[in-house]
Length: 197
Image (cartoon, rainbow, N blue to C red; front, side, top):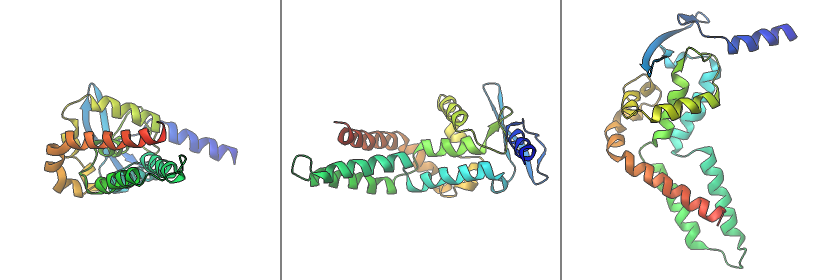
């Protein structure tokens, strides 16, 4: 049993073969950025389960227009406001953060959600095509954010197959991107203000 588990762990950590993975999924070169080649599966719906489950988690964030951390922060803020620590429940504050949450549902996608999903779909030679390394994914995202046109590029790749609504929203996304990022920061600032005054 120990041998099987050890072989499984080695398989997750080995460098990928960029032809066929498990005789099912074909890896293809997607793009090169700053000298690093990035690959993806020719069929984004047929990626190994380690990456697919992470893609599903990030897709849910995209669909809700907020992260799990944002929802936890929102719940914590509501708990604080409802506790009435100064003998009063602040309905104005509750109404404001509730309105902020409702606004998020109607927003065009927040760019971070697109970057997160891209970090799953696109991988370099140092990554395993079978599993997703969250810390390495964050490093890729930070590097990609330094490139001014990378978001436009992602909107023209197989990534859009995983998020079909981006096809219709891509014009709105480009137009309203600065506004969406400002609104996201304002919403988060308000929650942090309540949670840690």
